[in-house]
Image (cartoon, rainbow, N blue to C red; front, side, top):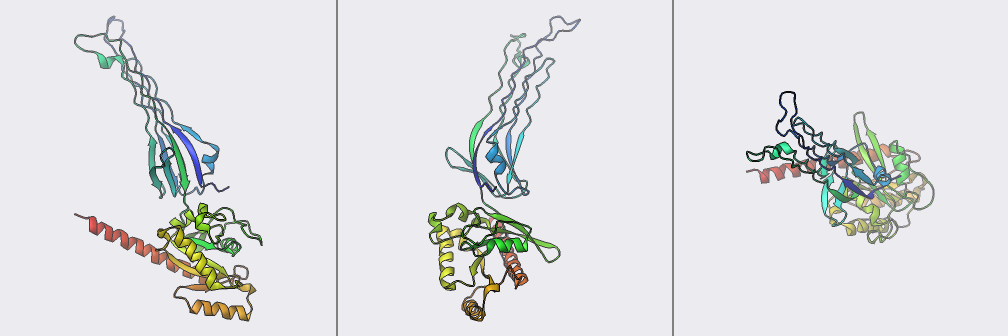
Length: 345
């Protein structure tokens, strides 16, 4: 099950209380105070894990609590600090304060972490309160309580290629052909109700990720159909591949509607590398093939007609995808380099 939004509650550990104790040994019957401090409570830390692709674990476990600190002990021994609780989430998880909607973190890379609540400090034992005028204090401090916070976790898939198109355009069939992903495939609209992520092995040593997104319809950016619930996953993809059926009555109209939905959703999509893939060419007769050829020649964008069923031009499609991924990566590197040059003192 794909889960991309969930609310959880996190609670850090309480600090342990300080100890009231006095040194008692055979030849020191009236020793001074030796009560140790309490241990610190554990933190709750969120860590991005590239092996996870859904927030399913957080759907079934909504409350996370770190370990409490132990009380101080005699002989000036400090109590043991509570263990930190580490919660793994998928890369691409946005962490919000559930009460204010403030973004606290955007965990995009493997191993990136954020401490969302800090454990309470341990209380001081009576040895800390000894003075020249009060040599036998019985005062101590209770540990500070931990913090509690409600968090909203929102996942936006991170992929190199995002497959976009009308329902039943052949996106799921394509991802099942080029990767090990096994999405549900059937000959009716909205077969895909949740995004699927596949890893494509390219050539001998390279690989890239492809996201199969539920079909879009006109008005999707306003929430029509499955709407903006899944459009958000397109934001983090490097390259968009727009799939259009070759048997469409009007290829140009379909392209215009899909492009408009993407652009209306957000300006971040306007600057992405994109291409067009014309699917189901195994169903094309000579007339349809001629129509697809004219469609491709009239556009200033890469158009690859292909068939997932027969395998026609699938390798050519992968080459086109890889070329755009490499181009986008170079632009990202150039952008980072220019940013460093601008900010360098």
